[in-house]
Amino acid sequence: MRTLILLALVGIGAQLVDGSLGMAYGVTSTTLLLAIGTNPAAASATVHLAEIGTTLASGAAHWRFGNVDWKVVARIGIPGAIGAFAGATFLSSLSTEIAKPVMSLILLGLGIYVLLRFTLQGLPARSDKPLRRRFLTPLGLVAGFMDATGGGGWGPVGTPAILASGRLEPRKVIGSIDTSEFFVAIAASIGFFVGLSGEGIDFTWVLALLIGGLIAAPIAAWLVRLVPPRVLGSLVGGVIVLTNSRTLLSSDWIAATDPVKTAVYVVIWVVWAAAVAWSVRAYRRAKAAEAAQLLESETTSKEPEADSVSA
Image (cartoon, rainbow, N blue to C red; front, side, top):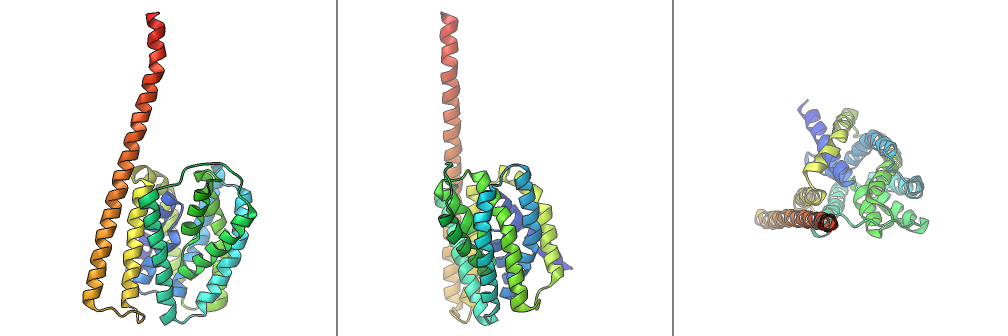
């Protein structure tokens, strides 16, 4: 029962992150599942089975509020499903001794990417331009493969790439990525069933993650008002980097000594704290600039009124 409660909390936390950033449900939940000793392929399969329900609910909500570009969903979702199926069957064929450090290495890379992206840049600016199939098809293939082999990656790869292209407004980027992830989750789940024959998948764990995600979905919209996406991205990126560094340092690939582990952890903590502090300061500067701009516009709009009264 304690494990199921923990998994439900993992699902809640991961969905809160995903709902606020448009990414990192799979990366966050898979990282935490690996941390409690879950088999890598089974961890990714568990997360993707739970995501069938969470992405369906999320996609329906985004569709209701007009946040979905169905052309983008089709152009990235179909190749994404193909890449996810290939990634799932590839991961299932690896032994646990190889798969765990490989997955941790992928997650570590994604964690570093999320940490740097939100610490240094925040969310890219908005600009509306058409998205081409030649851009979305390879992006979907790569993101789908990364998502299945790393237990997450659809959002961290797809969302920033489309945002950075400046060709779709942010709300539709997040809505389209979340909606298309439903097809990726189904394809990855089928791939894991083919590769694992259902072995190692605990459906009570899937249900616990799903319940947690469904509980958190409406809360995420409230959370984003309190925790700025830039700060949350730095926080989550640090968690992912720290957790997967621990896994890699303890693996047979590296087998680091305790002094080396301690030194690496200290460096990570220092860099992580500096990144969060930088994000907080950048957010405050941005808010101060917005307030100053708003005050200036209000002052400018009042000057003509004063001139007309004096006249």
